[in-house]
Image (cartoon, rainbow, N blue to C red; front, side, top):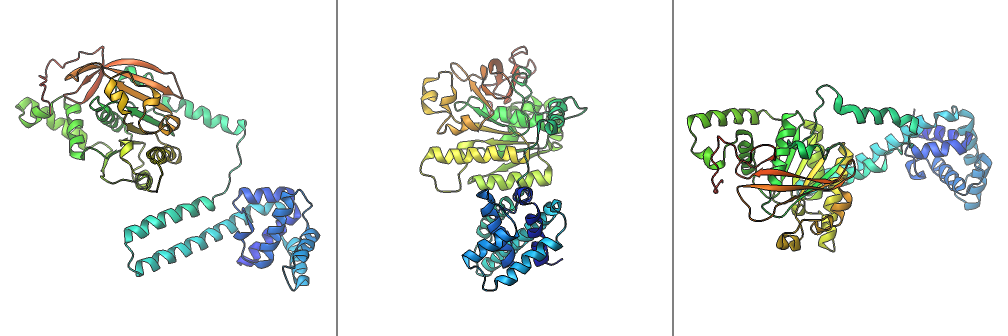
Amino acid sequence: MSRDEIEKQFVGCVLQDPKTTIDCAIKRGVKSHEFLLHPFAREAYKIALELSSEYADVDHLAIYTEAQKRQEFQNMPAFSIWLAEAVDNSPVAASIDYYADLIVELAAKEALGRESDCVRQSLEKGISPTKVARIAAERFKKIAEEYRAVEPAPSAAEVIDYAIITLMEKKKNGAPVVKFGVPSLDNLVQLEHRTMTTIAARPGIGKTSLLGQLALNSAMAGVPTLFISLEMPVDRIVHRCLANLSGLTIKQMREMTPEQLETFNSSKRKFSQLPLFFQERGKFTAHDFEVLVGKMRDEENIGLVILDYVQLMLPGKKCDTREQEVATVSAACRYMAAEHDIPVVIASQLNRAVEKSGTEPRLSDLRESGSLENDSDIVIFLHKNGAYDVVKETQVIVAKNRSGSVGKTSVWHRQATFSFIDKEKPALDSQTSYAAEYY
């Protein structure tokens, strides 16, 4: 069937039952007359949309009369015959979904073809491939959004089964769960799909250590995890992960006894088999973040994204204030969680006033942005009183929790092995001698 015939059948379906078919066509993605190419089809659908928006009658005669007023065509009899044939030869009005989908697919294919030509021409002109790729990605994303059908809002009867499944999915045999590995904290918060969690603290309190422990526990539970580090080199993060797994300090790893070497090698083998992926970047934009997460979701089916830390990501576009920059980055993190149905966990700095005073942080203390508070489903603060000891009692404060309760718990932070444990366990491992200089 030719493009002209498809558009003719589409208009015929619209004219048979305009009250129903116009809404269906818009929901399927044919939002304007610009999706059509044939001049008669474009004008007929344009007038039909306008009349429908004004709650006027839409039929063969009304469209012909309106086109005649506008003097759109010199050969009006030909337009009248075309309209009559469209109504007489089209299938039932219920076929509108089928023809609307065809039109959207054809329009999207043409748009992709135009953009592909632009990519080829840009490369032939000698423009940087990375710049061409970045611009093309933005344009292809716009095409995907523009030609996407508007799905109808489901009823309560339609969503109840899925809601029960997601509510109970953690009870499925072998279903992987994202946990910190600290029972008192895991009892307070659950890192569910489509959620954004912010972990904030003053420098040196243990944000990266907690993120590393989360990455290890998630990967060991079978959840492919992506760790994006914008501050610390990947090798140092791996050092911390090995210290957490083995119970050995970095200093001990450099001068191991035979027993420690055996423990270390066992931890190294265990670590190398984990579905854990690292990305170390100096300059990293919100767009880079979206591209990377999408790629890793498609290729490795990642189930958790960790970002350390959010203030170092660049917005990738001009913003008037620093707050707008962080808000853009926060929105990208929130979008990725929803788009890919995964939890996204990000580290954040606190305002300098809190860093200086040492007081217990509040939601308003998230640095340079109120958007982090609004976008986050869960906000966790780490807080210590006094000097930063090798092992220090740490307050874990759940200040926001959309899916549960807020609250506090006290844990031990073993800084020498970059690990967090419940206070019920001994603060120091009796088999490990912790030195103040642990790195």
